[in-house]
Image (cartoon, rainbow, N blue to C red):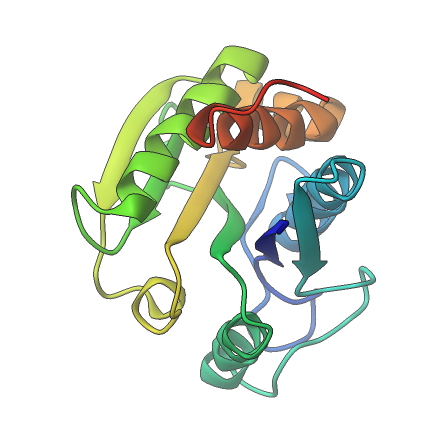
Amino acid sequence: MAIRIFIDQGHNPTGAPNAGAVGNGLYEQDITYIVGIYLANLLAQDPRFEVRVSRSNPEEVLGTSNSSSLAARVSAANAWPADYFISIHCNSNVNPAVNGTEVYVYEQYSQAYWLAEYILGGIVARTGTKDNGVRINSSLYVLRRTQMPAVLVELAYLSNANDARKLETDPFGFAAGIYNGLLEYFDFSPV
């Protein structure tokens, strides 16, 4: 039976509630959308996976507020039901020197934690971003309310010029990094 992966492309389009960060001329929701679609396409071509995305087109708006937007994403994953939940985001910091990739999970030494380690390793190996580690954050709604192992991936920093360039020029690389991490986690060989 195929492994069901739910990809949540974080945030809504500009002007809608729950819009994402902006930096170096890039919008978080645009990057997360395209990386999510690339990842979904990679998974869809692999018969070992089934995949669904939270936003099927770049203009799609989920919910009418921050909280209902997050609830819609979690509800879709729980109702399917997905086996794993991957929420894709871009980071931002007031200090433009801060850069790199980190992955958040609800608790340490869980299935999600091990998955996060592989996804983080896959992204860093493929894109050359700095490894900022797996971090625990039990307050994040999408990690708290999902009924399956869930990770929140902060691809890189929009506020850092080098990271932003990677996000803009190689969104496929970030998707491929996540996919490679999934293959390693499941001990699958590439198709």
